[in-house]
Length: 202
Image (cartoon, rainbow, N blue to C red; front, top):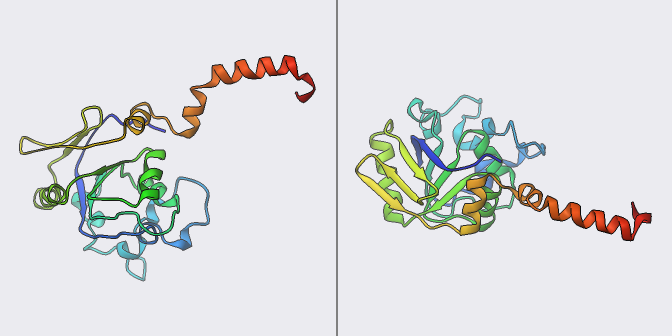
C-alpha cells in the first residue's frame, strides 16, 4: 500500500447523498478478485449512457476534473452492500481522498485498508469545498495528513479528525499484511523456538 502524506490535487464535486456501493461499482463488475481494472467501471450507471458513451454532465467525465485525486460528495457515502470492490474501483480511477459529511461504516473502514483517506467534515464545510471546486475547478486543494488539514490557496483551511492508528497506517503505507510483517522478527523467533520444541510439526 502506498504511503499517504500530503496530497495536492484538484477536486471533483459530486452533489449526491446516499451514494451506495452499487452506484460506485455495479454488481455485474464484481466477478474479479483483482484490485485493478475496475476504475473504468466506477459509477458506471451514472457515468455512462446505455450505449456506453460518457455522460457529459457527470463531473468525472468533464475535462477540468479528469485528473482529480480528491472527491467531494454528500452524506452517507458508500452505503449499501459491503463490497470491497467499491474502494478498489475508486482508487483504480485515481481517487485517493474522499471528503463527505458522513460515510457508511464498512466502506469507511475498507477505504483505510486500501490506502484511501476518507475525511468527515461538517456539512457547511463540505458545501464550501464543493462550491470552490465547482466555481474554480483548476485551483488545487492540499490535504496534509500529518497536520490533519485541508487547504485551498489562502482562502480555505479546515482541520479534520482521524483515528491515530488509522493515521499511522496511512502515513506508513501499512495494510493488514504490512502490519503483520512489522511483527516478523517476533514471528520468526516464535517459529524457531516452536521448531525446537515440536520438530515433528515442521
